[in-house]
Image (cartoon, rainbow, N blue to C red; front, side):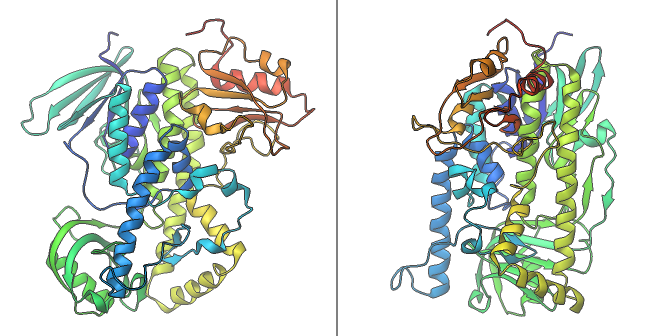
Length: 524
């Protein structure tokens, strides 16, 4: 089939844009269709996890994230000044504590993280990035997508599609007038959110649990805010959050889902909810941005149906507690992007795509369970309050904080891949080399990496014929001991590793063939 693009990505949020960038790095032509014409200013996630920061780091984007984080820190300091009533004078506001996240509103103190835990240490500079709002992620990815040659069509929505021999025809229309066109492609990926049109039209099942709460999050102008306690606060009628930036509020009430989740959120509704859960006579005088959410938790049993795939909230939805939604979706995009590009470019059979659901579905299912547990723990009933106190006491230890932080951030996740080395299936450690570079510096082009740390010509010989998709680098680490060799997939996951003297050449050959097909002598 003659095609206009290799892949159509429906949805131009962070997940769709990240996927489009990964597809372009892999050599696929891609178009993103998105109803909006500008970055979504609705208040959403305010932080990213270490695996997400690693993904950006491995594509050379960490300096940009660091700049965004600095601005976020300044907003936090402004909030502290407001709470202290210094007005910018007097004692300097404290810097935010080391980022560690929260579980069910129980804050995890960064100073209690185990500094020697390898899951954090191995992340390198990425471990120091966290305070990055979702809007900034979307802005940075929009710029990067266009730099890479992704066609981003704002103001355009997908209205339908059907499969044809060897591909798929996607109907799109300008959101304003409904007139449309047909885009021919080989693949379609739905990154169009929890109410995904792609998922519904493709007939994916979406089982799960129904919502029990009504939540609101907003940036507002208000009077009487001095009566609100900063941070996360549990009360007899629900829960509220004040901060960590001026005007930011969040409320949760446990009396069932909203009657109409799609209705605009008004200042009167926000004010009433905040008064009910806080008991403070706060008056909201203006709303800059507001959103309504629930805790329904659903997941597609399979992320692929023929030539249609799902990623991000289109594949799984859950409550926002713990801030895992954006991070889970970025992980989907990193996992799928290089695989789909390899299939498109003929470097791998379609069967490679089976590993996408196999690897990502268990992690999505785990996140759904983790968010359900948080909702149960936040309920105002005495039993939940008692259990919350037990969990809070656990987090007051190094072991407890480290456990919860590793779980909430996802750094402890591992794919079930062949191989006995403890690094296999995990995010690659950000090794520092004697020439001053680090492992992440070698992954900017989106190719896999065979890292020879023992100057082993036999190891390097296994990669002959894979130059199109596997970069071979001989390096040395000043701090050793390190593995003698690593095969790192484009998404940063270790596909093979061996220690000095292991002699696991067959394992390397199998891993190369598993992920990149039979070795070829063609170099692009």
